[in-house]
Image (cartoon, rainbow, N blue to C red; front, side):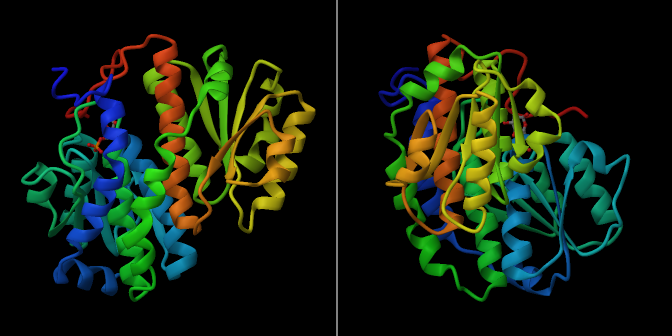
Length: 344
Ligand code: G6P
């Protein structure tokens, strides 16, 4: 068992460190002509997914709609079956295992309505690959830890490739090199942030645009493995309710990279500080303006927003991982959870 962990304390940490490779291999494998054609022909796209895969699907929506001007809908597998949206356009099932019952049920419905279907999965020959018209394989390699990490990053690689196909290869270079930025974050220390989170009853994660689903994923990871209650919120929405919960004991993790929402994020952070919540901020390395107004500053390499989605996600995985370790949780096998949920 220890040998399989390759010197890491947990599979989760090993898999976090395998992410540059998982991303790079998925990009390197490319997209088949059949899948490219399907993507180019699509007039709208619906993604169905559960859990962490639902968050990668939401990130795709935030990237694809403004960059490729294509309407994207994202549905939870568990809701789709009972409250189906209009079934038209390309339907993509996003599932690491390829075996999640709710996602499979949604995919079957899409097929029954004659929608073109694509599966994005990490497991060759899994159930979704047998149902969907075509498959786009992620190249994460087997993931042992219950919490999804490298499969999340490989899913983002596959979804970013779809964006790239729709943008006629505009992001070729960026995607070829993104794994280097992911690698830069792996050794980021988290002590100060962990000290705040491990004592907390609630932690909020906030971001805007694609960093909103990144914050949802950060919160999910925190709940899954450390059992600290966490919620991911669109930064501008905290004032519509959660502000009532902010106290000096309620840390807020704010994702605040450079870009169009930087200024408004800074004002949100100031509002939260005024409610005396400790702020842990993820921002561009060397951003002293941000570092000075927050309690803990976590530097992220300066890069394109698409790459920042990856680097901030990895930093949040590390935050949850180290918090879970500090609380002596069973990191690889969190209570009550399964790697793959094959019942509806
Ligand atoms: C389970 C796992 C999650 C995963 C979800 C969807 O709940 O614990 O980590 O995100 O299933 O899994 P899938 O294989 O469909 O991506």
